[in-house]
Every structure is written in C-alpha cells, then in structure tokens.
Image (cartoon, rainbow, N blue to C red; front, side, top):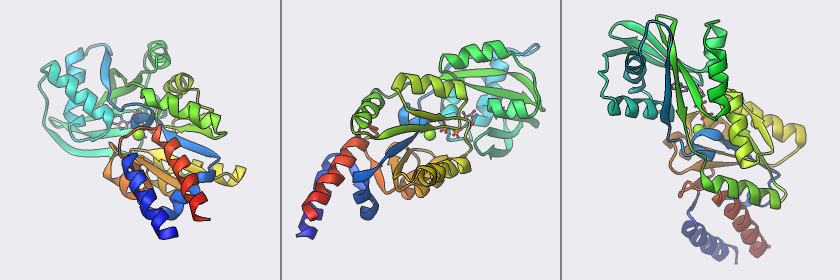
Length: 291
Ligand code: ADP
Ligand code: MG
C-alpha cells in the first residue's frame, strides 16, 4: 500500500504548501531534535527599511546614501533592496558603478564614479580598525536594527541603520516546536546584538551570530556530531545553501533565492516558518501509515 500512501501524502503536502523534493529526507523529519533557522528572510520578513543615516564629519546623508545605493543596485541582498528603495524615495542621484564585487557574508565593494566604495558589516570595520560612534552603534543594534558602514577610498563616511520585521508566524513556530520537545537554534551573519534582539522576541533556545556562510554549514555539522542530534536547517539565502545541504533535512523559504530552493529537501511555498511544524507532523503520519 505504500505507493498509494505516498500519492495521498503528496497531495496533502501540496495543499499545505509543502513542496517535497527529497522524500527520504522528508520522512526523517518525524524524529528531529532541533531546527536551525537563518535570521534574515526566514524568521524575519527580509524587508528592510532605512531608519537612520549617520554621517561622519564632512559628509551629508544624501552623499552617503548615494554612494551606498549606487553600489547596492548590483546586490540582491535584502539590505540592498532597502537601501536602493530609500534612495528612490529621497530622489538622490546615483553614480556609475564599475568593478562590483560582493565580499561573502561581509558586504560589497566597487567603484562609484571611479572612486572605491564599500558597504560592509560591523565585523569588516572592526577588522580594518576604523573608528566610529560605538555608543550610537550599540544603541541602534540593541533596538534590533542592522547597521552597515559606508566607506569611500577605505575611509568611513557614515553608518546606515535598517529595520526588518519579525514574521508573526515565526513565534508560533518556535512555541510549537518547544511543545514538541524540539529545540530551536538561530544562525545569522548579522551582528550579535541584533541576533539577541530577534531571539528574545521569539524565545529561541540558542543563538549563533556573525557566522560566515561556510561556517553556517560547519555549525550545523557540529550540532549534529557533538550532540548526536537529527537537525533540520531552514533558510532563504545563497549563504544558507551549504548549511541546507549539510543538515539531515534542508528546508527553504519559498520567497527565498533559487539556490536555496534547489539545495533544499523541502520548500515552504507559503514562506511560513510555522509550516515546519506541519511538515514534521505530516512525516509522522505518513510513516505510521507505511509500517
Ligand atoms: P544573514 O545570515 O542574516 O542572512 P548574511 O550572511 O547575508 O546575513 O550577511 C551578513 C552581514 O553581511 C549583513 O548583516 C551585513 O552586515 C553584511 N552584508 C551582506 N550583504 C550586504 C550588502 N549587500 N550590503 C551591505 N552589507 C551586506
Ligand atoms: Mg537569510
């Protein structure tokens, strides 16, 4: 009777908005010990709005916004979308971009009207020993804002703070996992303070912040091996793909990147983190019918 059960469960899963790409791994979802979530675009909506522009001496807000938005036109990151959108609202003139490159997990770099510009993470700025208003940075981060730094010819011109929104359904997902004895873990490339803010809102059990893309996969492997746990990874970005492949079950957010969806075992078509719980229940039911 197994093939019929499979056909029926496929129809049910489609109705629930689950696209199952790897059935064997899906069936393993019935005994997961932990679900790892990416932050941006997975637990949050990934729709950033600019909240503050903080110029360093001798620059003004529009100049900083123009440097950053010119370069961000070439990036698909949610931060980029937020900055470009804001520059359109403010009607700032953008410059001509050459030599664009992304620096994985740390930001972007290129030339704007022939001058070197970077839009980068706090980690990058610390590594390059550039000084900034640490107190203001801390305040904004503690409010859950993601802060990026704009550099011109390797000198700091200012900070741009952006706010994202937690998905309402993420909280329900975490609560429900907890009731089922499944731990929830967050892995993000973003700053520790922002990560803590989101984790607190959602009551997440464990948080790993400032994790570079390759380290996301290593971290998943470590959780699997050290604790002997069955682990699912849920993510949306190009940077999550290695971790999706490493987990026992890779789950992609439907609104995410193609790379994430092509790597995942299951796609959440409705981009609803709560569907992770449905997925586990469905795999339990399917398994029970088959044995
Ligand atoms: P997450 O794991 O939360 O999805 P990423 O690994 O994509 O985060 O990015 C980590 C950090 O790198 C961001 O918080 C930001 O500081 C920086 N970054 C990445 N892409 C960009 C970009 N296009 N513009 C500016 N900063 C970026
Ligand atoms: Mg993400």
